[in-house]
Length: 290
Image 1 (tube, rainbow, N blue to C red):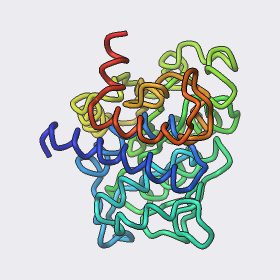
Image 2: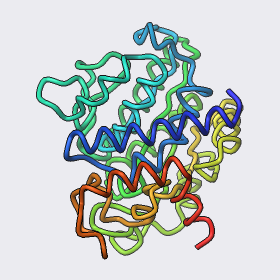
Image 3: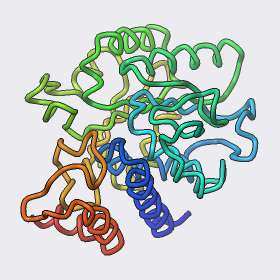
């Protein structure tokens, strides 16, 4: 895909996220919107996968550790051809395959069930080691949140992966600087993440998580690193593309129409404004020039 095509696909995925969340009446907004460019790059350029054969043995594995951001994964999977896009509107419904946190046994193409934060990297490291022991050439990608790095068990996985020299493992940290209680640096300071991962003997790459060149190049570079796992620290804007959501941690766990905005007595208008921002790049223009 050209970068213009990728950008258009990411815009569609962001619109899907807003519509899904409004239909569900619950769910997380900021993280999924911020991750749309990364998931677009993964599903349409980076991953070796077959949407019509989700259990293809030679596929790359994608683990979503911060499972609450799964609306972006569902939207990317639907647009890549895993299931019909109309099914996206069943998010969080009783009996739906698209639960609020991903459930592996419900939807082909999901590698793990995730909910408790901090567990995904341990699962990804185990998969990477098993694939290497079997002589496989598949790669394992793991998405984590930055607030998730408050969990102690994720650092055990970081040590394990480095000790086993899992060069077939790439972690992408969504560095959006927010979590449910506020900003990451006020809640539990993460400080210099690059230095911390490097101290654990990982190869560290820092990128703009909204730049397709940077995302794809970093994933390609990771394939050339030997004897060490790779972490890509992707700096993203939470709520990307929706002006009133960008950088605001209150939208971490709320969909449009659930929080009051200054001067906006009608919460029903929030979805309309969000879609307008996305279709006119309103939110992106504001964030880049404010």
